[in-house]
Amino acid sequence: MNPTPGARSYSFPKEEHLCRKKLIDELFGRGSSFGLYPLRVVWLPTPAPTTAPPQVLVSVSKRNFKRAVDRNYFKRLMREAYRLNKYRLLEADGGHRVGQLAIIYTGKEKKPFTLVEKKLISGLERLLLDAPPISGMASPS
Picture (cartoon, rainbow, N blue to C red):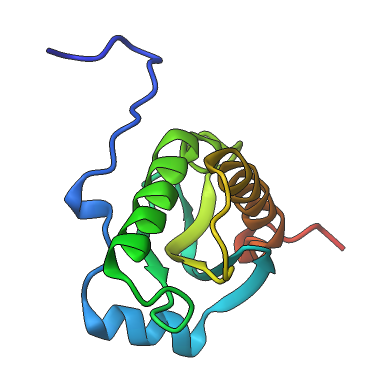
């Protein structure tokens, strides 16, 4: 079954999951970050603009949520919010510059899905603004 042209894909396939330890270490070592309570977003830019989806890591602190069932709940919540709103990044004019992305839940209490989704949308929009300028498109002087 082929999607109709122009239809959005709301999938979150395995290829978009960030799993390799080397890439994760590089993301946290060289990446930029900002916080939008209860989320923290860490990202690493790509050398050139792209329309390909970034690799995404979703994490919840064991320090704040001792029970695995609670951590899994928040990871599921953040994955769902990202899956439904990643088109904002992928359909940006001129592409985006995000190669790898980590979304970390830093809150200490449960928040509703609507709040988490709203903060994630704000984070994706901020990513588009914070992305470094494209080096090949400098203004003529």
